[in-house]
Length: 339
Image 1 (tube, rainbow, N blue to C red):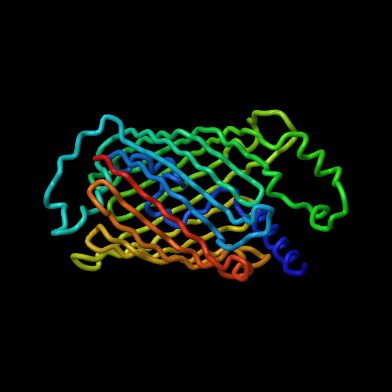
Image 2 (image 1 turned 30 degrees about the vertical axis):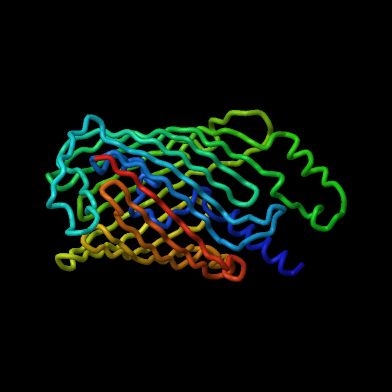
């Protein structure tokens, strides 16, 4: 029982004081997920699917699983983009094709689509959104872009995954809980986001916001209110050329959802001949109630062919969750590039 109560307190602190949007370790190569203005930064159709399983090993509900799980799909493409001719010089001898460069030095418009399914404990969120971005050249090497996202989010309470105190202690029915679940367990909210992004092939800097309408526009009957809050994200990174084969890119992502504590990820990523990359990051949650969300991560990825890229990352939890989330966290993404 002591272990059960401790786990309950940790989950309460993690879910009540943390941010509502999913966590992504591989944000460097999936910036559309955190900033709509990044849509169309590359001059090709980019389709990426991925999944994240956080705090693996954490289990305490009727189905044996309360660990957060996220799946996503996004696509982005530049409108009326000129076909990029294949250049044999871009290939590595007997190896995969190199990373494509970002398209700068010209005005362009881009459209995108994003689908995210997120489940944590007894809560589930399904999001469908469309994105638009306009990219304005500042010079031949640097562009800035403005983007917007418009969609709907369905928030649900999964009562079959919930255990209230009366169930655990077998004290009989809980009238308040029974009334709660009888009044509707799902609501739909309008989801509006916006972002600014400035980038080149050497650096990027972005600022974005999500859930700007909070719960102002909602659909569905029932009294359940999931109270979506505004989120703000800042990203930045710079690529250093170490020699002809190696580059080093330090980057960071800062996330804020008042009154939740600020979350900060600092990442160092090495890249070999622009097709193989690996790195590590440290996630710090500036909370006064503990370090349950802190983690050390490692990542690895590559362009496995001219069309496909793959990436994997592993999160090792620190602080209060370490004793329960013994399996850490896993994130896998697969990208399809149509040039």
